Length: 448
Ligand SMILES: NC(=O)c1ccc[n+]([C@@H]2O[C@H](COP(=O)([O-])OP(=O)(O)OC[C@H]3O[C@@H](n4cnc5c(N)ncnc54)[C@H](O)[C@@H]3O)[C@@H](O)[C@H]2O)c1
Image (tube, rainbow, N blue to C red; front, top):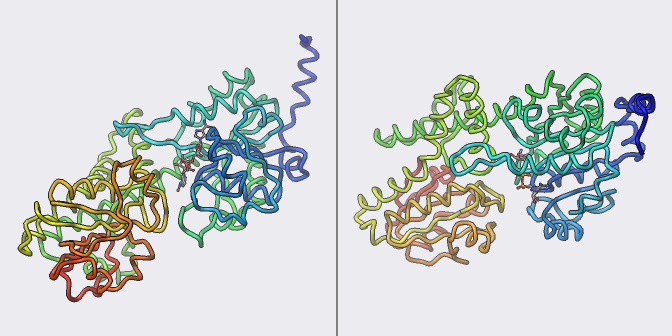
C-alpha cells in the first residue's frame, strides 16, 4: 500500500529512539546477537539473564550445538545456558522481531595481511535486510577507526532503504573479552560504548550498563571507540615486539632476557612485558587494520609495522636457535627428534587459529629430523584440517629437545623429571614463555 506524503510524515514522527532500553527492559523488544563465537555467545547469554535475546549465526551446526547447551568454542559451561530467555537460530526470518542488533563476527586479515571485511559486510547485509524504523545496530567486531560509518552504515542504508540517524541508529562498542580467562569475565570488564548521536549513545549505554557490573565508558564518537580498541592491542603488540627484539640482542650477548627484565622491573615505571609468540586473531591481527588505515590516510606507521614484522619473525628465529643449541650440544640438528608442547595460539584455550606455535613447528621441521606435537587442549582433527599436522596423543621418550611453546596450566605444573621422561640424556629444554626459569637444573636450559 502506498502512503501519502502526509501519512509518511506521521509514520516518521512515530519513530521513537529514546525508549529502546525501556522496551528491552520490559521485554517488549528483543536484542539480536549476530555471530555467536568467542565474543557473541557470552554477550548473548549475559543479556539473556535479563532480556529477551535471539542468537543468530550462519553456521547451522554451531546453532544445533548451542540449542543443546554446548558452546562450540568451548568457553561457556553448559550450566550458563540454563534459565535464559534466549533462542538460537540460523534463519534470518527469526530476526524480524528484534529491535537492537549487536554484530560480533570475525574481522580477519587476508593472505596479504590486509583487513578482510567480507564477513562483516555479509553480516551487516543480513541486518540491513531485516532493519526497521527505530532500530539500533551496535557493532562489536574489531575494525579500523571510521569503518562503522564508512563501510557498515552504507550497507545498512542500501539493504533497508532506510536513512541513517533518521530511521535507524548505530553504535560501536568494542569487546575486550579474554578467552580462557575465568577471572576477567564479560561483566567485570569496563565496556566502551559509543553512538551515532547523543540519543543513541544514551540508549546504548543504558542497555550495556544493565549487564556490565564494572561500568561503561561513554566515548564521544564511534571513531574514538573503534580507535581505542585497536590501540589497546597495538600497544601490546609493539611492547611485546620490543621484548622480542631485546631477546634477539641478548641471545648474542649470552644474557637471559627474563633475568634482565626481572632486574629492570624493580624500577617503579618499568612496563611489565615479556618476549613470546604473538598469534591469535586479535593482537597479531588488529594492528594491520590500523596500519592499512594509516597508510591510506597519508601516514606510514613504521614503528607499528616494525613491531608486527619482529613478532611475526619470532617462530623462525626460535626454530633456528633450537637447531643451533642442538648442534652446540653435539646433536646433529638434521637427525634430531624434537617435541613441541602446545599448538594453540595461547595458553589454556582450545583455539588454534593463527597459532605461532604452529609456525614454530613448521620452522623446526626445516632444521630438525623429526618434530612431534602434543597439546592437551587442541582438537587433533582441527589441527589436522587447519595445519595438516598430525598430533601425537602422548609424547615418545627419546627426544633431543622439548620446546614448551604454550604455557598451558598442565605444563606449568610439570616438573623437570616429567619433561626428562620424554627425553634422551642431556636433552635441551626450550622454555619459550620462561615458565620454568630457575627450575631446570639437569637438562640444558634455553629461553628467549
Ligand atoms: N576472540 C577474542 O578474543 C576477541 C576479543 C575481543 C574482540 N574480538 C573481536 O570480536 C569479533 C568476533 O570474534 P570472535 O573471536 O567471536 O569470532 P569467532 O570466529 O569465534 O566467531 C564468529 C562467529 O560468527 C559467525 N558468523 C560468521 N559469519 C556470519 C554472518 N554473516 N552472520 C552471522 N554469523 C556469522 C561464525 O559462524 C562464528 O560462530 C572479531 O572482530 C574479533 O576481532 C575477539
